[in-house]
Image (cartoon, rainbow, N blue to C red; front, side):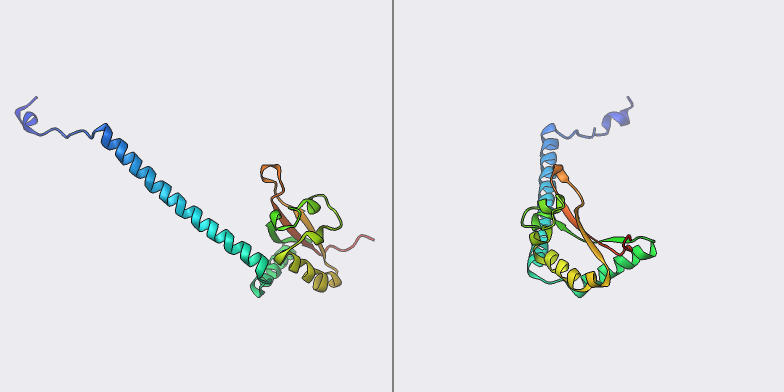
Length: 156
């Protein structure tokens, strides 16, 4: 070792205690960030629930449905998923829809019920059909319900 190297101060090593402290601080910051994300998601969900049950189908939602249908037509399809909502929003948790029972419309609430009534009033007389189906099964249980509008020619 040269004289210069002997005279240069060695970099001090951070203690294990200091590393543990820093790791805990980082975990705390991450936990606070995760909590903020969960709070924001809970707030968004509460707003969605409130809107679903207390507001009407907006003109913006109707325009979106029209665009989805026209895109499906342009793609050569005869059916489009026009609306979806959690099965928990049905009075029976989506069981009637999942079982293809004829009384499934009676389980609808909120905007889903309004959309079904609007379909019967406006679209059905124009030759459209509407199918409701469970579109996913998280944990083996009915998840979301989808409304599928179709315009396929009837089979004669």
